[in-house]
Image: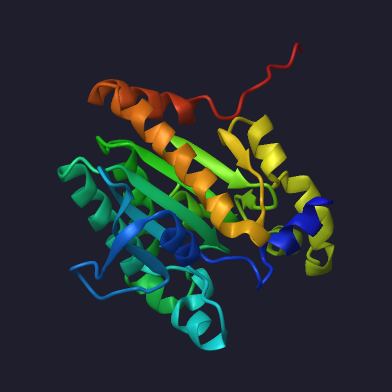
Length: 264
């Protein structure tokens, strides 16, 4: 598949949403609401559940909705500032009670309406990234569809990041890139190829730790495999000291990307 074909696959309306993964992977879930500042953004589905009988965890999932009504309610999976602040509130709560954090990302990007900017969209995203770098509890993130720009990174500053095989992860949408570079949004396929947005690209650049095989016909089996990987990572990360956990997370992001010096 070409990068553009993977992009279209990642956006397919038939793909499971973030809440589908949460409900399949976690048991005895309790949804929590609100940022304690402005309101509740249902684009982010967050709360507490059990990965195992003795392993409670905090979950955060960006959810696009399943039909027109739910998609409008969830801003088509584009969180507003109160959504990111809700996520941060739940992450800080997880740190307090020594619970691991599991995030499921599927967003074109943060909501870009005027009201979101008025309520501090950029600051909310930046605060999440800053705070996640210092959270003294394991963080696992899985990109299940689109991982768009800072809207995705606000839930992906994690110790381990995975992508589904047809998911995409990008600093900007290919449509936005095409409009900026070529002044032509019809060149979206070219932009998708240039941006290197596929899971294979991300693994090559060491942005992610692994690629998860998609098997939506056997979704339960697929989610059991994901749960097993999450539990394995959580157990490994929990054995580290708090300082080692933070140092490893910091170094993980410092290693992403590289520079080449010219001989001239």
